[in-house]
Amino acid sequence: MTPIKKRSFERIRDIVYETSGIALTSRKEALVSARVGKRMRALGIDDFEEYLRYLEDHHDEEIVGLLDAVSTNVTSFFREPHHFDFIADEMNAWYESGQRRFRLWSAACSTGEEPLSLAMVVKEALPQPDVDLRILATDICTETLAHCELARYEDRKVAPIPADLRSRWFTSTGRGDERVWTAKPALTDLIVYRRMNLSEPPFPMRGPLDAVFCRNVMIYFDDAVRVRLLAEIGRLLKPGGLLFVGHAESLAGMISGFKYVRPSVYRKA
Ligand SMILES: C[S@@+](CC[C@H](N)C(=O)[O-])C[C@H]1O[C@@H](n2cnc3c(N)ncnc32)[C@H](O)[C@@H]1O
Image 1 (cartoon, rainbow, N blue to C red):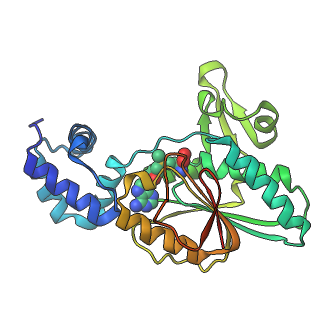
Image 2 (image 1 turned 45 degrees about the vertical axis):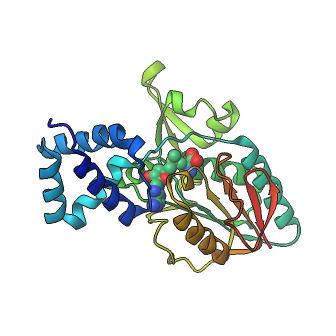
């Protein structure tokens, strides 16, 4: 494969920013070269200039492939566990006050661990039959969304799930390293997966939402995209609704109409 030229990197960087809000700095050149290179090998292209021409000619289809290639999809079940304890307590309080309809959004759901963790904790916290719960789970990456729909996870991926929850909410097949866990319909039926680009508000949902998990995605955006996204989340949340962000994502100076609750948790005023 021909090494990437600065000009090609800059063109790819600009296209990625315009279409996803993901801001790739020059420190990401090696990463982009490796990830886009892999995509190019799948297409039988070995030159970045030629790939850019291909992208121009097949823009609508290939932009999806490019964004799939450059997005970072690291996630895990019960990542930042205190968020899940907090939402469980909050849902209980809302139920006690008479609320029965709950709408949650996992805004960058990657391979599905986040919405499934949410579904498990809420089902455990509120087993009552009159609870009307729906979770919207969205991502820009079509490969991870396909993974979400399968809801199948290798043994090592389900390790963070407490054993009792794992056996209640998953079925397993195979043995040892080959063991695979599949989420039960009692969980998956609660979740709707959609492709959605967080850098392009307004979003089609009407709201009001009770809580939004928008975690570990704003780190890839610049302030302009973050401010637009936060304003849209503010529009969609109910008064008193909760926003959870990644612990490395400070919203200082970017968010209005929210009260700080604790690190990485905000409440709409
Ligand atoms: C690091 S993962 C975070 C997953 C999960 N929220 C968590 O905290 O574990 C970031 C996800 O953001 C998605 N993403 C990046 N840019 C996006 C955009 N503009 N719109 C929607 N999703 C985006 C990526 O595809 C990736 O799956």
